[in-house]
Image 1 (cartoon, each protein chain N blue to C red):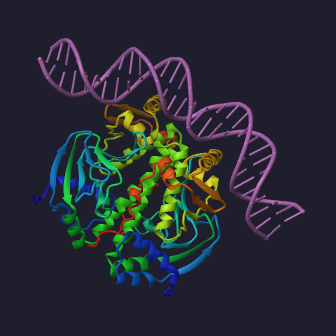
Image 2 (image 1 turned 45 degrees about the vertical axis):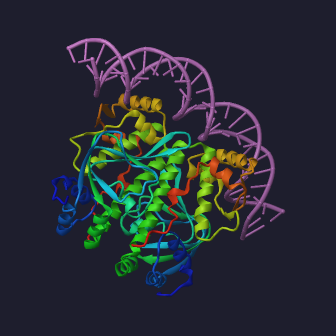
Length: 246
Length: 246
DNA sequence: CGCCTATTTGATCTGATTCAAACAATGTGG
DNA sequence: CCACATTGTTTGAATCAGATCAAATAGGCG
Protein backbone atom coordinates (compact mmCIF):
# COMPACT_ATOMS: atom_id res chain seq x y z
CA UNK A 1 0.00 0.00 0.00
CA UNK A 2 2.64 2.49 1.01
CA UNK A 3 4.55 3.41 -2.11
CA UNK A 4 6.96 6.11 -3.03
CA UNK A 5 5.27 7.08 -6.21
CA UNK A 6 6.41 9.31 -9.00
CA UNK A 7 2.74 9.75 -9.84
CA UNK A 8 2.53 12.34 -7.12
CA UNK A 9 4.99 14.63 -8.91
CA UNK A 10 2.13 16.64 -10.30
CA UNK A 11 0.88 17.30 -6.76
CA UNK A 12 4.24 18.72 -5.79
CA UNK A 13 4.24 20.85 -8.89
CA UNK A 14 0.81 22.20 -8.07
CA UNK A 15 1.74 22.86 -4.47
CA UNK A 16 4.91 24.63 -5.49
CA UNK A 17 2.95 26.94 -7.74
CA UNK A 18 1.30 28.45 -4.68
CA UNK A 19 3.48 27.48 -1.75
CA UNK A 20 7.10 27.57 -0.74
CA UNK A 21 7.56 23.86 -0.09
CA UNK A 22 10.51 22.71 1.98
CA UNK A 23 12.55 19.63 1.11
CA UNK A 24 11.36 17.51 4.01
CA UNK A 25 7.76 18.49 3.25
CA UNK A 26 8.13 17.49 -0.38
CA UNK A 27 9.59 14.16 0.68
CA UNK A 28 6.77 13.55 3.14
CA UNK A 29 4.18 14.44 0.54
CA UNK A 30 5.68 12.05 -1.99
CA UNK A 31 5.78 9.32 0.63
CA UNK A 32 2.05 9.46 1.34
CA UNK A 33 0.44 6.03 1.31
CA UNK A 34 -1.84 6.16 -1.71
CA UNK A 35 -4.06 3.92 -3.69
CA UNK A 36 -4.03 4.58 -7.41
CA UNK A 37 -7.32 4.26 -9.22
CA UNK A 38 -8.17 4.62 -12.90
CA UNK A 39 -11.71 5.64 -13.57
CA UNK A 40 -13.80 6.31 -16.64
CA UNK A 41 -15.37 9.61 -17.66
CA UNK A 42 -18.65 10.77 -16.10
CA UNK A 43 -18.47 8.75 -12.92
CA UNK A 44 -19.38 10.18 -9.55
CA UNK A 45 -16.42 10.09 -7.16
CA UNK A 46 -18.16 11.42 -4.08
CA UNK A 47 -21.82 12.24 -3.70
CA UNK A 48 -23.92 14.80 -1.86
CA UNK A 49 -24.61 13.39 1.60
CA UNK A 50 -21.59 11.09 1.68
CA UNK A 51 -19.27 11.08 4.69
CA UNK A 52 -15.95 10.17 3.16
CA UNK A 53 -13.10 8.74 5.19
CA UNK A 54 -10.58 9.35 2.46
CA UNK A 55 -9.88 12.01 -0.08
CA UNK A 56 -8.24 12.02 -3.47
CA UNK A 57 -5.64 13.82 -5.47
CA UNK A 58 -6.27 14.15 -9.17
CA UNK A 59 -3.28 12.84 -11.14
CA UNK A 60 -4.63 12.84 -14.68
CA UNK A 61 -7.84 14.07 -16.28
CA UNK A 62 -10.50 16.63 -15.44
CA UNK A 63 -13.00 16.51 -12.58
CA UNK A 64 -15.98 18.75 -11.82
CA UNK A 65 -17.88 19.67 -8.69
CA UNK A 66 -21.63 20.02 -9.07
CA UNK A 67 -24.92 20.40 -7.29
CA UNK A 68 -28.36 19.41 -8.47
CA UNK A 69 -30.93 22.10 -7.76
CA UNK A 70 -34.72 22.09 -7.81
CA UNK A 71 -36.11 20.29 -10.82
CA UNK A 72 -33.11 18.39 -12.10
CA UNK A 73 -31.01 21.38 -13.09
CA UNK A 74 -27.28 21.00 -12.59
CA UNK A 75 -24.86 23.69 -11.56
CA UNK A 76 -21.21 22.85 -12.05
CA UNK A 77 -19.33 24.82 -9.43
CA UNK A 78 -15.75 24.11 -10.40
CA UNK A 79 -13.48 22.25 -12.75
CA UNK A 80 -10.38 20.57 -11.38
CA UNK A 81 -7.12 19.77 -13.08
CA UNK A 82 -4.24 17.42 -12.29
CA UNK A 83 -2.41 18.09 -9.05
CA UNK A 84 -5.46 19.41 -7.22
CA UNK A 85 -7.20 18.01 -4.15
CA UNK A 86 -10.77 19.11 -4.75
CA UNK A 87 -12.13 17.22 -1.81
CA UNK A 88 -9.84 18.68 0.84
CA UNK A 89 -12.90 19.99 2.66
CA UNK A 90 -14.04 16.52 3.62
CA UNK A 91 -11.13 16.46 6.08
CA UNK A 92 -12.85 19.19 8.07
CA UNK A 93 -16.53 19.04 7.12
CA UNK A 94 -18.05 15.67 7.69
CA UNK A 95 -20.92 15.63 5.22
CA UNK A 96 -20.60 16.35 1.49
CA UNK A 97 -22.75 19.29 0.40
CA UNK A 98 -22.13 18.61 -3.31
CA UNK A 99 -20.87 15.88 -5.61
CA UNK A 100 -17.64 15.36 -7.52
CA UNK A 101 -17.52 13.57 -10.85
CA UNK A 102 -15.02 12.85 -13.58
CA UNK A 103 -15.28 14.76 -16.84
CA UNK A 104 -12.75 12.62 -18.69
CA UNK A 105 -11.08 9.32 -17.93
CA UNK A 106 -9.00 10.02 -14.83
CA UNK A 107 -6.23 8.68 -12.68
CA UNK A 108 -6.69 9.34 -8.97
CA UNK A 109 -4.60 8.81 -5.86
CA UNK A 110 -6.73 8.10 -2.80
CA UNK A 111 -5.38 8.97 0.63
CA UNK A 112 -7.08 8.20 3.90
CA UNK A 113 -8.02 11.09 6.16
CA UNK A 114 -5.96 9.34 8.79
CA UNK A 115 -2.82 9.48 6.66
CA UNK A 116 -3.41 13.11 5.76
CA UNK A 117 -3.97 14.10 9.37
CA UNK A 118 -0.76 12.29 10.27
CA UNK A 119 1.12 14.09 7.50
CA UNK A 120 -0.13 17.46 8.75
CA UNK A 121 0.65 16.52 12.33
CA UNK A 122 4.21 15.68 11.35
CA UNK A 123 4.58 18.74 9.09
CA UNK A 124 2.19 21.36 10.44
CA UNK A 125 3.44 23.99 8.06
CA UNK A 126 2.08 21.90 5.16
CA UNK A 127 -1.42 22.75 6.30
CA UNK A 128 -0.74 26.27 5.07
CA UNK A 129 -0.31 24.92 1.59
CA UNK A 130 -3.59 23.00 1.70
CA UNK A 131 -5.37 25.96 3.26
CA UNK A 132 -4.02 28.22 0.53
CA UNK A 133 -5.29 25.81 -2.07
CA UNK A 134 -8.73 25.70 -0.43
CA UNK A 135 -8.87 29.49 -0.13
CA UNK A 136 -7.93 29.90 -3.78
CA UNK A 137 -10.71 27.47 -4.66
CA UNK A 138 -13.08 29.70 -2.72
CA UNK A 139 -11.79 32.75 -4.59
CA UNK A 140 -12.53 30.96 -7.85
CA UNK A 141 -16.10 30.21 -6.69
CA UNK A 142 -16.56 33.88 -5.97
CA UNK A 143 -15.21 34.92 -9.33
CA UNK A 144 -17.58 32.52 -11.06
CA UNK A 145 -20.43 33.84 -8.98
CA UNK A 146 -19.61 37.38 -10.06
CA UNK A 147 -19.52 36.20 -13.64
CA UNK A 148 -22.84 34.40 -13.53
CA UNK A 149 -24.47 37.22 -11.62
CA UNK A 150 -23.16 40.24 -13.44
CA UNK A 151 -21.39 39.37 -16.69
CA UNK A 152 -22.97 38.55 -20.02
CA UNK A 153 -22.60 35.22 -21.79
CA UNK A 154 -19.67 36.19 -24.00
CA UNK A 155 -17.70 37.58 -21.07
CA UNK A 156 -18.40 34.48 -18.99
CA UNK A 157 -17.19 32.06 -21.61
CA UNK A 158 -14.08 34.11 -22.37
CA UNK A 159 -13.33 34.50 -18.68
CA UNK A 160 -13.52 30.78 -18.05
CA UNK A 161 -11.13 30.11 -20.89
CA UNK A 162 -8.61 32.60 -19.52
CA UNK A 163 -8.89 31.01 -16.10
CA UNK A 164 -8.48 27.43 -17.23
CA UNK A 165 -5.53 28.31 -19.41
CA UNK A 166 -3.79 30.15 -16.56
CA UNK A 167 -4.37 27.35 -14.08
CA UNK A 168 -3.12 24.74 -16.51
CA UNK A 169 -0.11 26.87 -17.35
CA UNK A 170 0.82 27.11 -13.67
CA UNK A 171 1.30 23.35 -13.52
CA UNK A 172 2.94 23.07 -16.91
CA UNK A 173 0.05 21.56 -18.83
CA UNK A 174 -0.03 24.07 -21.66
CA UNK A 175 2.02 24.23 -24.86
CA UNK A 176 2.39 27.62 -26.49
CA UNK A 177 -1.13 28.98 -26.65
CA UNK A 178 -2.95 25.69 -26.35
CA UNK A 179 -4.29 23.72 -23.46
CA UNK A 180 -6.48 20.68 -22.91
CA UNK A 181 -10.13 21.65 -22.76
CA UNK A 182 -12.20 18.47 -22.72
CA UNK A 183 -15.39 20.19 -21.66
CA UNK A 184 -18.55 19.78 -23.70
CA UNK A 185 -20.83 22.70 -24.50
CA UNK A 186 -23.46 21.18 -22.23
CA UNK A 187 -21.00 21.13 -19.37
CA UNK A 188 -19.96 24.70 -20.09
CA UNK A 189 -23.61 25.65 -19.97
CA UNK A 190 -24.04 23.99 -16.58
CA UNK A 191 -20.96 25.77 -15.28
CA UNK A 192 -21.80 29.21 -16.60
CA UNK A 193 -25.51 29.26 -15.92
CA UNK A 194 -26.43 29.26 -19.60
CA UNK A 195 -28.23 26.97 -22.03
CA UNK A 196 -26.15 24.79 -24.31
CA UNK A 197 -27.67 26.49 -27.32
CA UNK A 198 -26.48 29.85 -26.13
CA UNK A 199 -23.03 28.53 -25.29
CA UNK A 200 -22.79 27.28 -28.84
CA UNK A 201 -23.65 30.70 -30.25
CA UNK A 202 -21.22 32.37 -27.91
CA UNK A 203 -18.41 30.06 -28.97
CA UNK A 204 -19.12 30.90 -32.58
CA UNK A 205 -18.86 34.57 -31.71
CA UNK A 206 -15.46 34.09 -30.04
CA UNK A 207 -14.25 32.05 -32.98
CA UNK A 208 -15.60 34.66 -35.37
CA UNK A 209 -13.60 37.33 -33.58
CA UNK A 210 -10.44 35.25 -34.02
CA UNK A 211 -9.89 35.08 -30.27
CA UNK A 212 -9.87 31.31 -29.89
CA UNK A 213 -9.91 28.02 -31.69
CA UNK A 214 -11.65 25.14 -29.98
CA UNK A 215 -11.53 21.67 -31.44
CA UNK A 216 -12.46 18.50 -29.67
CA UNK A 217 -10.56 18.70 -26.44
CA UNK A 218 -8.03 21.43 -27.22
CA UNK A 219 -8.36 25.16 -26.73
CA UNK A 220 -6.02 27.49 -28.57
CA UNK A 221 -5.95 31.11 -27.58
CA UNK A 222 -5.24 33.12 -30.69
CA UNK A 223 -5.42 36.55 -29.11
CA UNK A 224 -4.67 36.54 -25.40
CA UNK A 225 -5.06 40.27 -24.89
CA UNK A 226 -8.32 40.33 -26.78
CA UNK A 227 -9.68 37.38 -24.83
CA UNK A 228 -8.67 38.90 -21.49
CA UNK A 229 -10.30 42.14 -22.54
CA UNK A 230 -13.60 40.64 -23.61
CA UNK A 231 -13.54 38.26 -20.64
CA UNK A 232 -12.94 41.02 -18.06
CA UNK A 233 -10.15 38.80 -16.76
CA UNK A 234 -7.78 39.84 -13.96
CA UNK A 235 -5.76 36.99 -12.50
CA UNK A 236 -5.45 38.43 -8.99
CA UNK A 237 -7.95 35.91 -7.62
CA UNK A 238 -5.80 32.97 -8.71
CA UNK A 239 -3.08 34.02 -6.26
CA UNK A 240 -0.38 32.42 -8.33
CA UNK A 241 2.36 33.96 -6.26
CA UNK A 242 4.44 31.78 -4.02
CA UNK A 243 3.49 32.36 -0.41
CA UNK A 244 5.96 34.41 1.56
CA UNK A 245 8.31 32.24 3.58
CA UNK A 246 7.33 32.33 7.28
CA UNK B 1 -4.03 47.13 23.98
CA UNK B 2 -4.25 43.62 25.33
CA UNK B 3 -7.62 43.35 26.95
CA UNK B 4 -9.73 40.51 28.17
CA UNK B 5 -12.86 41.63 26.47
CA UNK B 6 -16.41 40.44 26.84
CA UNK B 7 -16.97 41.83 23.39
CA UNK B 8 -15.48 38.69 21.96
CA UNK B 9 -18.20 36.53 23.49
CA UNK B 10 -20.02 36.50 20.17
CA UNK B 11 -16.92 35.06 18.49
CA UNK B 12 -16.87 32.21 20.96
CA UNK B 13 -20.56 31.62 20.38
CA UNK B 14 -20.02 31.52 16.63
CA UNK B 15 -17.03 29.20 16.95
CA UNK B 16 -18.93 26.89 19.25
CA UNK B 17 -21.74 26.60 16.73
CA UNK B 18 -19.36 24.79 14.37
CA UNK B 19 -16.48 23.61 16.51
CA UNK B 20 -15.91 21.74 19.74
CA UNK B 21 -13.93 24.41 21.56
CA UNK B 22 -11.82 23.43 24.56
CA UNK B 23 -11.59 25.54 27.70
CA UNK B 24 -8.01 26.64 27.19
CA UNK B 25 -8.77 27.51 23.58
CA UNK B 26 -11.75 29.61 24.59
CA UNK B 27 -9.61 31.43 27.13
CA UNK B 28 -6.87 32.08 24.60
CA UNK B 29 -9.39 33.34 22.07
CA UNK B 30 -10.91 35.74 24.57
CA UNK B 31 -7.45 36.97 25.54
CA UNK B 32 -6.53 38.02 21.99
CA UNK B 33 -5.10 41.52 21.85
CA UNK B 34 -7.72 43.47 19.94
CA UNK B 35 -8.48 46.97 18.92
CA UNK B 36 -12.17 47.85 18.99
CA UNK B 37 -13.41 50.08 16.24
CA UNK B 38 -16.87 51.53 15.63
CA UNK B 39 -17.57 52.31 12.03
CA UNK B 40 -20.50 53.74 10.08
CA UNK B 41 -22.57 52.02 7.45
CA UNK B 42 -21.32 51.71 3.86
CA UNK B 43 -17.63 52.10 4.55
CA UNK B 44 -14.99 49.95 2.89
CA UNK B 45 -13.01 47.96 5.44
CA UNK B 46 -10.56 46.31 3.08
CA UNK B 47 -10.21 46.91 -0.63
CA UNK B 48 -9.34 44.88 -3.70
CA UNK B 49 -5.55 44.97 -4.05
CA UNK B 50 -4.84 45.69 -0.38
CA UNK B 51 -2.26 43.62 1.50
CA UNK B 52 -3.61 43.70 5.04
CA UNK B 53 -1.43 43.00 8.05
CA UNK B 54 -4.38 42.56 10.36
CA UNK B 55 -7.81 41.04 10.15
CA UNK B 56 -11.07 41.74 11.92
CA UNK B 57 -13.81 39.99 13.76
CA UNK B 58 -17.29 41.40 13.36
CA UNK B 59 -18.85 42.07 16.76
CA UNK B 60 -22.00 43.98 15.80
CA UNK B 61 -23.66 44.82 12.51
CA UNK B 62 -23.64 43.40 9.01
CA UNK B 63 -20.78 43.35 6.53
CA UNK B 64 -20.69 42.36 2.86
CA UNK B 65 -18.02 41.11 0.50
CA UNK B 66 -18.17 42.43 -3.04
CA UNK B 67 -16.41 42.69 -6.35
CA UNK B 68 -16.81 45.33 -9.04
CA UNK B 69 -16.98 43.80 -12.51
CA UNK B 70 -16.72 45.28 -15.98
CA UNK B 71 -18.65 48.48 -16.33
CA UNK B 72 -19.36 49.41 -12.74
CA UNK B 73 -21.61 46.49 -11.87
CA UNK B 74 -21.31 45.19 -8.33
CA UNK B 75 -21.60 41.59 -7.25
CA UNK B 76 -22.04 41.06 -3.53
CA UNK B 77 -20.55 37.66 -2.78
CA UNK B 78 -21.48 37.23 0.87
CA UNK B 79 -23.11 38.82 3.86
CA UNK B 80 -21.46 38.49 7.25
CA UNK B 81 -22.99 38.55 10.69
CA UNK B 82 -21.60 39.10 14.18
CA UNK B 83 -19.06 36.54 15.35
CA UNK B 84 -17.61 35.93 11.89
CA UNK B 85 -14.10 36.58 10.60
CA UNK B 86 -14.78 37.28 6.94
CA UNK B 87 -11.23 38.25 6.18
CA UNK B 88 -9.56 35.11 7.51
CA UNK B 89 -8.16 34.48 4.05
CA UNK B 90 -5.82 37.46 4.29
CA UNK B 91 -3.80 35.42 6.78
CA UNK B 92 -2.88 33.02 3.99
CA UNK B 93 -3.37 34.96 0.73
CA UNK B 94 -1.42 38.16 0.62
CA UNK B 95 -3.40 40.28 -1.82
CA UNK B 96 -7.14 40.99 -1.50
CA UNK B 97 -9.10 39.77 -4.53
CA UNK B 98 -12.29 41.55 -3.42
CA UNK B 99 -13.45 44.25 -1.00
CA UNK B 100 -15.28 44.16 2.31
CA UNK B 101 -17.66 46.91 3.38
CA UNK B 102 -20.10 47.59 6.18
CA UNK B 103 -23.80 47.35 5.46
CA UNK B 104 -24.89 48.87 8.76
CA UNK B 105 -23.06 50.70 11.53
CA UNK B 106 -20.67 48.09 12.92
CA UNK B 107 -18.41 47.29 15.82
CA UNK B 108 -15.22 45.49 14.83
CA UNK B 109 -12.33 43.93 16.70
CA UNK B 110 -9.07 44.16 14.78
CA UNK B 111 -6.37 41.57 15.41
CA UNK B 112 -2.90 41.60 13.89
CA UNK B 113 -1.89 38.68 11.72
CA UNK B 114 1.02 38.32 14.08
CA UNK B 115 -1.25 37.82 17.09
CA UNK B 116 -3.44 35.37 15.18
CA UNK B 117 -0.46 33.34 14.00
CA UNK B 118 0.79 33.28 17.58
CA UNK B 119 -2.61 32.12 18.83
CA UNK B 120 -2.66 29.31 16.29
CA UNK B 121 0.92 28.39 17.07
CA UNK B 122 0.05 28.08 20.75
CA UNK B 123 -3.23 26.26 20.08
CA UNK B 124 -2.81 24.47 16.75
CA UNK B 125 -6.13 22.74 17.09
CA UNK B 126 -7.86 26.15 16.86
CA UNK B 127 -6.85 26.34 13.24
CA UNK B 128 -9.40 23.61 12.59
CA UNK B 129 -12.11 25.93 13.80
CA UNK B 130 -11.00 28.74 11.51
CA UNK B 131 -10.56 26.36 8.60
CA UNK B 132 -14.05 25.01 9.19
CA UNK B 133 -15.40 28.54 9.13
CA UNK B 134 -13.54 29.32 5.91
CA UNK B 135 -14.73 26.09 4.28
CA UNK B 136 -18.32 26.80 5.27
CA UNK B 137 -17.94 30.24 3.72
CA UNK B 138 -16.83 28.55 0.53
CA UNK B 139 -19.83 26.23 0.69
CA UNK B 140 -22.06 29.28 0.95
CA UNK B 141 -20.40 30.83 -2.12
CA UNK B 142 -21.12 27.67 -4.03
CA UNK B 143 -24.74 27.58 -2.93
CA UNK B 144 -25.19 31.19 -4.03
CA UNK B 145 -23.55 30.37 -7.32
CA UNK B 146 -25.97 27.54 -7.87
CA UNK B 147 -28.82 29.89 -7.05
CA UNK B 148 -27.72 32.63 -9.41
CA UNK B 149 -26.92 30.15 -12.13
CA UNK B 150 -29.87 27.83 -11.96
CA UNK B 151 -32.68 29.12 -9.75
CA UNK B 152 -35.29 31.74 -10.61
CA UNK B 153 -35.65 35.05 -8.83
CA UNK B 154 -38.31 33.95 -6.33
CA UNK B 155 -36.32 30.90 -5.32
CA UNK B 156 -33.15 32.92 -4.91
CA UNK B 157 -34.72 35.50 -2.64
CA UNK B 158 -36.48 32.89 -0.52
CA UNK B 159 -33.30 30.84 -0.29
CA UNK B 160 -31.27 33.78 0.93
CA UNK B 161 -33.82 34.50 3.61
CA UNK B 162 -33.74 30.92 4.85
CA UNK B 163 -29.97 31.02 4.93
CA UNK B 164 -29.66 34.31 6.79
CA UNK B 165 -32.25 33.24 9.34
CA UNK B 166 -30.48 29.94 9.97
CA UNK B 167 -27.08 31.52 10.35
CA UNK B 168 -28.39 34.17 12.71
CA UNK B 169 -30.25 31.54 14.70
CA UNK B 170 -27.04 29.57 15.17
CA UNK B 171 -25.50 32.47 17.09
CA UNK B 172 -28.63 33.38 18.98
CA UNK B 173 -29.57 36.50 17.04
CA UNK B 174 -33.14 35.51 16.22
CA UNK B 175 -36.30 35.82 18.28
CA UNK B 176 -39.17 33.49 17.44
CA UNK B 177 -39.53 33.78 13.69
CA UNK B 178 -37.82 37.11 13.29
CA UNK B 179 -34.28 38.16 12.60
CA UNK B 180 -32.41 41.34 11.73
CA UNK B 181 -32.33 41.93 7.98
CA UNK B 182 -30.89 45.36 7.32
CA UNK B 183 -30.31 44.75 3.64
CA UNK B 184 -31.76 47.11 1.05
CA UNK B 185 -33.43 45.88 -2.10
CA UNK B 186 -30.57 47.29 -4.09
CA UNK B 187 -28.09 45.26 -2.06
CA UNK B 188 -30.23 42.16 -2.44
CA UNK B 189 -30.18 42.75 -6.17
CA UNK B 190 -26.38 42.97 -6.20
CA UNK B 191 -26.15 39.78 -4.16
CA UNK B 192 -28.62 37.76 -6.18
CA UNK B 193 -27.71 38.89 -9.66
CA UNK B 194 -31.04 40.66 -10.21
CA UNK B 195 -32.20 44.23 -10.76
CA UNK B 196 -33.58 46.13 -7.81
CA UNK B 197 -36.91 46.49 -9.60
CA UNK B 198 -37.23 42.75 -9.93
CA UNK B 199 -36.22 42.17 -6.32
CA UNK B 200 -39.01 44.49 -5.32
CA UNK B 201 -41.58 42.54 -7.31
CA UNK B 202 -40.28 39.26 -5.95
CA UNK B 203 -40.58 40.51 -2.37
CA UNK B 204 -44.16 41.48 -3.07
CA UNK B 205 -44.82 38.00 -4.33
CA UNK B 206 -43.38 36.41 -1.18
CA UNK B 207 -45.40 38.78 0.98
CA UNK B 208 -48.50 38.07 -1.07
CA UNK B 209 -48.06 34.37 -0.45
CA UNK B 210 -47.92 35.04 3.30
CA UNK B 211 -44.47 33.50 3.56
CA UNK B 212 -42.65 36.48 5.02
CA UNK B 213 -43.04 39.96 6.44
CA UNK B 214 -40.21 42.35 5.84
CA UNK B 215 -40.24 45.76 7.42
CA UNK B 216 -37.30 48.14 7.69
CA UNK B 217 -34.56 45.96 9.04
CA UNK B 218 -36.53 43.00 10.36
CA UNK B 219 -37.49 39.84 8.56
CA UNK B 220 -40.29 37.67 9.94
CA UNK B 221 -40.78 34.26 8.51
CA UNK B 222 -44.49 33.50 8.65
CA UNK B 223 -44.35 30.08 7.02
CA UNK B 224 -41.00 28.37 7.41
CA UNK B 225 -41.95 25.21 5.56
CA UNK B 226 -43.44 27.18 2.71
CA UNK B 227 -40.38 29.40 2.43
CA UNK B 228 -38.00 26.45 2.51
CA UNK B 229 -40.06 24.78 -0.16
CA UNK B 230 -40.20 27.73 -2.53
CA UNK B 231 -36.55 28.53 -1.79
CA UNK B 232 -35.31 25.00 -2.52
CA UNK B 233 -33.49 25.26 0.80
CA UNK B 234 -31.52 22.40 2.35
CA UNK B 235 -29.25 23.43 5.21
CA UNK B 236 -26.62 20.74 4.64
CA UNK B 237 -24.16 23.28 3.22
CA UNK B 238 -24.21 25.34 6.42
CA UNK B 239 -22.59 22.44 8.30
CA UNK B 240 -24.12 23.51 11.58
CA UNK B 241 -23.04 20.37 13.34
CA UNK B 242 -20.30 20.54 15.92
CA UNK B 243 -17.13 19.00 14.54
CA UNK B 244 -16.31 15.60 15.87
CA UNK B 245 -13.80 15.76 18.67
CA UNK B 246 -10.36 14.66 17.44
C1' DC C 1 -39.48 71.01 7.10
C1' DG C 2 -36.80 69.58 3.46
C1' DC C 3 -33.27 66.51 1.67
C1' DC C 4 -31.74 62.15 0.49
C1' DT C 5 -32.28 57.45 -0.05
C1' DA C 6 -35.21 53.48 -0.66
C1' DT C 7 -39.40 51.50 -2.38
C1' DT C 8 -42.93 51.00 -5.61
C1' DT C 9 -45.43 51.11 -10.11
C1' DG C 10 -45.96 51.03 -15.18
C1' DA C 11 -44.34 50.40 -19.87
C1' DT C 12 -41.14 48.62 -22.95
C1' DC C 13 -37.29 45.96 -24.42
C1' DT C 14 -33.82 42.16 -24.82
C1' DG C 15 -30.48 38.48 -23.82
C1' DA C 16 -31.04 34.23 -23.24
C1' DT C 17 -34.27 30.14 -23.03
C1' DT C 18 -36.99 26.73 -25.03
C1' DC C 19 -38.51 23.82 -28.53
C1' DA C 20 -37.64 21.29 -32.58
C1' DA C 21 -34.89 19.30 -35.87
C1' DA C 22 -30.80 18.39 -38.62
C1' DC C 23 -26.12 17.19 -38.67
C1' DA C 24 -21.47 15.58 -37.25
C1' DA C 25 -18.52 12.89 -34.68
C1' DT C 26 -17.36 9.04 -31.92
C1' DG C 27 -17.81 4.60 -30.38
C1' DT C 28 -19.66 -0.38 -30.50
C1' DG C 29 -20.80 -4.76 -31.79
C1' DG C 30 -21.45 -7.95 -35.36
C1' DC D 1 -14.95 -2.52 -41.75
C1' DC D 2 -19.45 -1.18 -41.94
C1' DA D 3 -24.24 -0.30 -39.79
C1' DC D 4 -26.12 1.64 -36.09
C1' DA D 5 -26.48 3.95 -31.70
C1' DT D 6 -25.14 7.50 -28.90
C1' DT D 7 -23.55 11.77 -27.74
C1' DG D 8 -22.32 16.41 -29.02
C1' DT D 9 -22.86 20.41 -32.09
C1' DT D 10 -25.30 23.48 -34.94
C1' DT D 11 -29.33 26.11 -36.92
C1' DG D 12 -33.87 28.46 -36.86
C1' DA D 13 -38.10 30.24 -34.76
C1' DA D 14 -40.91 31.51 -30.96
C1' DT D 15 -41.13 32.87 -26.29
C1' DC D 16 -40.14 34.64 -21.68
C1' DA D 17 -37.95 36.00 -17.30
C1' DG D 18 -35.97 39.59 -15.98
C1' DA D 19 -33.65 44.13 -17.44
C1' DT D 20 -34.09 48.84 -18.43
C1' DC D 21 -36.12 53.30 -18.46
C1' DA D 22 -38.88 56.71 -16.31
C1' DA D 23 -41.42 58.61 -12.76
C1' DA D 24 -44.11 58.70 -8.51
C1' DT D 25 -44.32 57.74 -3.59
C1' DA D 26 -42.71 56.88 0.98
C1' DG D 27 -39.41 56.82 4.88
C1' DG D 28 -35.73 58.38 7.74
C1' DC D 29 -33.11 61.95 9.57
C1' DG D 30 -30.49 66.32 10.49
